[in-house]
Length: 81
Image (cartoon, rainbow, N blue to C red; front, side):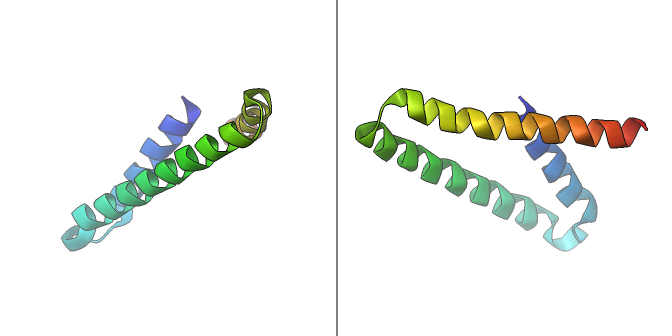
């Protein structure tokens, strides 16, 4: 959920700051890059699932989630203080 919200905020930031003539192109490029990163991650997870146990894969993914939540919490403290 936090990743989806962060990406939406990122798109809003691009839409606000892009020059009007290239705003649509900028949003399309960002969506394409996001799609490419997603496909690469799926391919990597597929290869890892063949090489190792899914427990290790989910543990590795959990580290990223925990890091994201800690960072989000720090950012919220900065905003509200």
